Image (cartoon, rainbow, N blue to C red; front, side, top):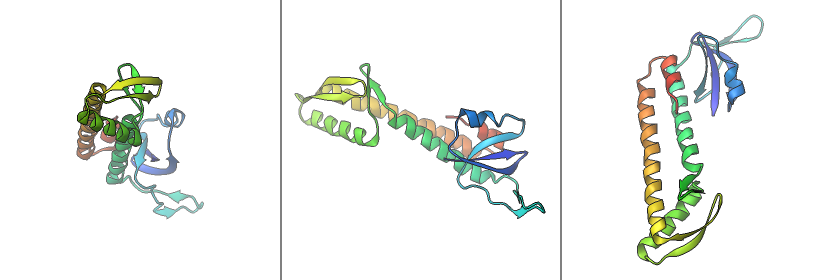
Length: 169
């Protein structure tokens, strides 16, 4: 993710690829924000001292960046793992595909049973387990997409940097 620092509704020319709490802590002054952005801002001119001069914020670019940030947050939560029966299952896209395959096998064969490796150990899984696991994960996944959609609507309605900054995963 790309981030840029904004102060008094102008780009500062300070940009980051990825941020952490330490970087966020640097920008706590009033009217100063670190915002996701789709593309780093370009200088509009150069000062007599050779330093770049940046223009006013493009709210649409900030909105696109915020939408990317929200999609990334949803993806991270989706693929970060899923708890079922006290075990944490892998939920990256490959693992989701494997669970779907086991779900389909379970629908076709009620006696389907396997030993499954989770993030925290081995688990004996039956057809019933896979059907429940798959359905519960789909409910979890749909909740993530609904959350992203609702936040996207807030981003689209935002007209100020403050309103965009208030939209959090």
